[in-house]
Image 1 (cartoon, rainbow, N blue to C red):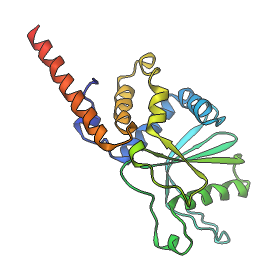
Image 2 (cartoon, rainbow, N blue to C red; image 1 turned 90 degrees about the vertical axis):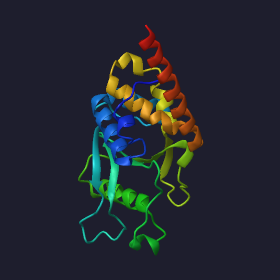
Image 3 (tube, helix red, strand yellow; image 1 turned 180 degrees about the horizontal axis):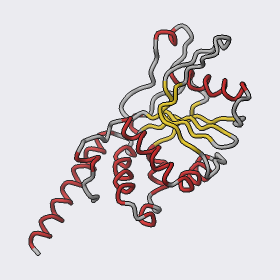
Length: 212
């Protein structure tokens, strides 16, 4: 069981903005933890001093640049050498706008083009990038046309954090971890079953306390 948190009270388990904000917050709070995750689990040599930005405007203002850009990147991580693009999806799919249709593009292509422009411009120290689509196991969108993006599941993050939660002694982060755990299943029905179990066991614990 887990303690009832604001994620439960406000029913925001499927709110992508809330999850993205929480991920950004805890990346800033525990940078070494997340840098180790990227190094150990994804093979990305992200420095502990990386920064994280939310809702990054991916529109290139240079009129000479003809590639398709625009939209807002959910999470853009950067250190002295590389960018890490993270697009977070919980219930939604990959989006397209009208100008994408004739190019067989999606929002992911636009985000990649934006970061490639930054690197090519020479105005930033970064020389490389990696891109990930973060999503539940039960709702991982197809990435056939977005070859630069790699799938990253909530299960991968939860599995890595599972034995590190207690040592952090952070109730809010623990609540966030349990909110993410709902999205580690292969089927959404299993999320609902897990919720029911948690409610059932919580009621038993509450009954025991009242009987004492």
